[in-house]
Image 1 (cartoon, rainbow, N blue to C red):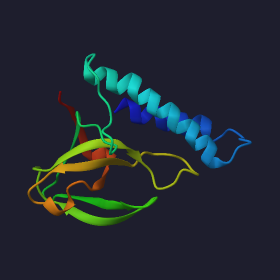
Image 2 (tube, rainbow, N blue to C red; image 1 turned 180 degrees about the vertical axis):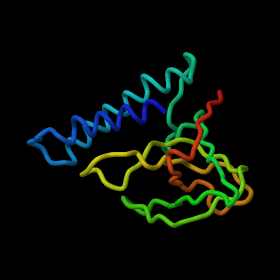
Image 3 (cartoon, one colour; image 1 turned 180 degrees about the horizontal axis):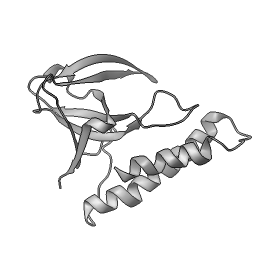
Length: 151
């Protein structure tokens, strides 16, 4: 996804190198505002064909499906449920393609160093196999997913 490359470059080539007077979290907010706007004005406008595409009140894009590329043994992922301001992530093995995931954002473990957007953060909205995890967030490795849109 070109958006992923664009915001990685913006963070790594500019934001990470500027000698900010503000604290790191202040300039992280600047970056988040810019990347959100960039996402809305590029990705969302391309996939929406003029119709409105917005995040739900719980933070995912219902029209942007993320499909993991499963190998013969499935795909290792992380799942987590927010607990206040933190999320405790647990390893899980995805074994079938019947799950429905929707895009939230890209994710990295740290913001103090080079950003890679190693993971795609998604919300599980439909699954028989993982019914106990419905509504939970998952981290899928970005190179191992495909994006699809629906109206």
